[in-house]
Image (cartoon, rainbow, N blue to C red; front, side, top):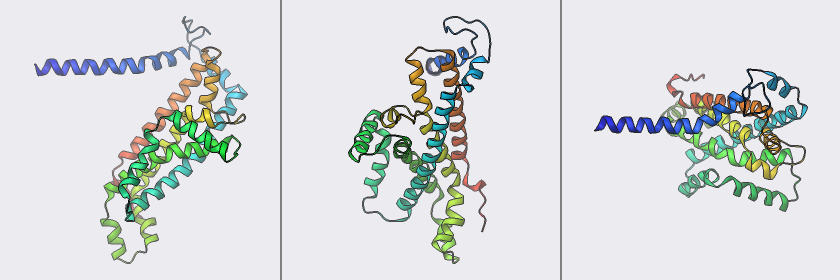
Length: 265
């Protein structure tokens, strides 16, 4: 009976994985199709990727996504790490409330957050463009950094910091030589996760983007409205590959054991 249940659950799990990833596999496959019609397969080709990199609008959208992603990820990582350190080291009266508010931007539907940010920017008469995109991306990615870094801080404990202070280290010296090296894998993982979120975001970017700040997801949406073409498949494939790679790297850094880290005094 137990064997039957195990095989049933295993088969159900594989069925769900096929259901989730088969459309992505088909999209990747047809990005190499020699025909512009996705319904027929006419052979293998790289020409859609070559034409993609020759497209000036695609390159502009790519540069917008990369610049917005890097700037917003750096800001989100710095602010999220600082907030995590503050929550850990300072006795806040409303600590439980603050911890709950951290998760609020994560669970709020993106369409509500995008609309709220659009109303905010319009109320302060701020022109929509790259900086509104950067601020919006910092808003929704910083909680992810805080969650990752806070988990790293919780695993680290307070013993090493207290030992450093007992040996005469200043608070800044303890932070620089003990705390930051130990939580660096979490910081890097938070940065990569926030960059991935920024690179993939469409809904919030759709609300707060300006006329000269089109990102890759927004550009793909504009292409899809005119019909799915091999260029869209190729661009989507590159975006999926970049996202998967960044998530894998972030997960590797997140799982890195603190005992493997080196602390330099």
